[in-house]
Image 1 (cartoon, rainbow, N blue to C red):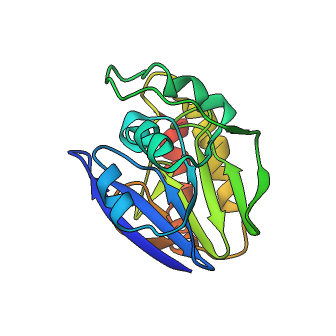
Image 2: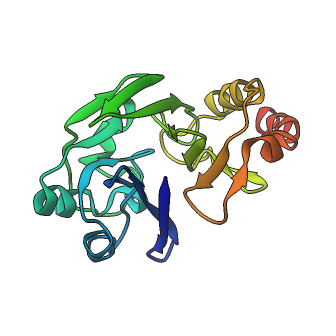
Length: 200
């Protein structure tokens, strides 16, 4: 697996291109991501969104049009692709596949697990490919996603943290913003974050 990373826009949202067997998967194409993606893919097969916030989905529509490849998102965040809840105006996009809960999908022979970790958004998900997590805005290096936005939920975030704390396997974590980390490293701080979420 080869992973290309490029932070996009003022929010420095990480756009990822994952290449396996000469097939490219685009994850979270944010603001002004189109040209970078076009210049760094040779055989794109899908666009995957970890969640529906504008800074992760801004270039969905342009890439769908230029590349004619399917767009995947967890179904509870699909509404955000039509109307941004954060007051921004990204081009609207229409998903081709709605993922439901924790679901394994296969795209041209590549197995991908969508793991549902709501809280930051109702459909916020980690995209698991082999031993790597693309964690969107659920999990960062020494931090977690905000739960004070419209449609966010502290209760759901707490449940997601409890779910993540129980996972025994380690993963390399590539977050929506900032540097990579590992699940085992971040699990050390999860009890603290869980307590904080429950009391705020």
